[in-house]
Length: 212
Ligand SMILES: [Zn+2]
Image 1 (cartoon, helix red, strand yellow):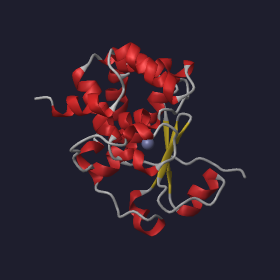
Image 2 (spheres, helix red, strand yellow):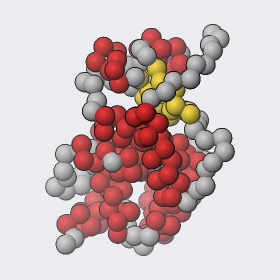
Image 3 (cartoon, helix red, strand yellow):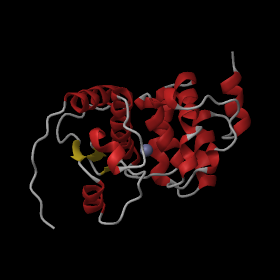
Image 4 (cartoon, helix red, strand yellow):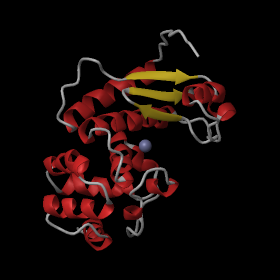
């Protein structure tokens, strides 16, 4: 099919995008000024399905593809998805979440795995952690290596927060950069240990969580 593009002005989306670009340029140590990402706001489930080229699930309201973020218009959220309308703050955080994925893929050269790291980065850096249930103990995020499993969102944001707050960011960027050289969970664990100096397991993350 063939479509024409029309510009859409929306202050909330513009602000979320600008804030995200500034914050992620800083975090990922980029100076991304040219050929920056685009946001394409979709009106309906039908438009989502046109872009996806398949019948999408009701929960799907946005995604990042290349350097474009696709997102359902918040005013049609209830009508066109299984979600309630998001607060302005949550909608802005959602846009930043997708924008964070675009930065992540720039560093990882498009590699999505491990899913917990990719989603954890987006949850933590977008400010979505405040909408998550607090964690008493880590018990499942490491299971989510391959993408596409719903449970990945529960613990991964907190796990990344601990990595960011306790260690130099260079380690995390180095980890993401080197993902291109590995192709399974075991090799990722080895890479993690080489960079962080401790084993990738729940015990070590729980120690960080409970550290006073
Ligand atoms: Zn995501």
